[in-house]
Length: 326
Image 1 (tube, rainbow, N blue to C red):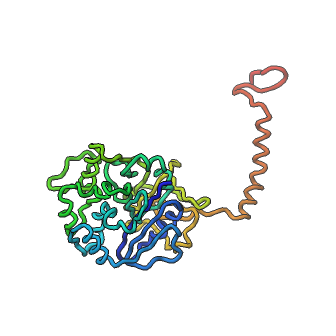
Image 2 (cartoon, rainbow, N blue to C red):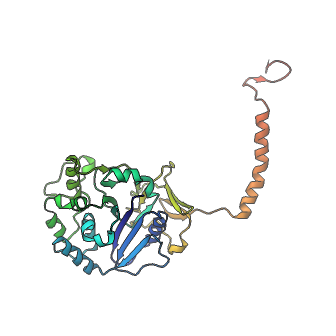
Image 3 (cartoon, rainbow, N blue to C red):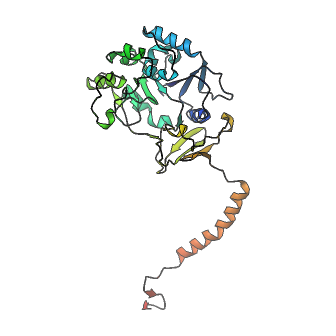
């Protein structure tokens, strides 16, 4: 199996939804996760999660030195611009993994290996799962080779974009809604998507971009279920479609959306996400299961008897040797 290591960074107090991310990361035991934060690691960290505690200004200084760029240190959200550079700036955390990716922690993860199969990884160099024709900030995977790791350098003016004091959206499209077919806004700098699509068109890299995810949207219902079986996580939507992840894009900032304050060890083995929040799926108790079994027994007997008795056709009654009209 080709190795896959996913990196995320965080600055400030840890978010309330982090236990959901870590619990569902643990449901992907063949994927390695590296979490770089300026906060101590929470207790009961999953075995496949490595926590690196690093002061945010020091981290930016190291990354800027690797790029030869002076990075602004005032806005933690600026790290989004730097995600495509992790193959160069955080190479020591990636090591010799076959593939690496940047991932956000406001995700509830399904079975990632169901999307990133060995065959799919072997045939592609860049992999996203949003199906929008762009590099996707919440999760994009790269083959760990120098040409792919340095693909961001093919975006015109990348140094100037990374030097901007505010996040420009370099990891996706710099604000250009390319997936909607809109014209490129005047003055929009080039992004990772521009560099990647040119490389794809030239045949230099192979790209993978199915739609295997779901994102929250304002005032829309959401019905997603996560459950863990035999140590593996599974995420499905209301149509039983398997998902790679659910993005808490708008839900996490919606005051009506309740996120329980579960410590990592208390996150249930099954829970649902609806428009109103995250709720545990109650497992039936032994007594309830026994009562249900007793109640269901007569129903099963009646169902079997019904199959033994022939059914009358509409408008007829059965009797004697032939049907007679009622």
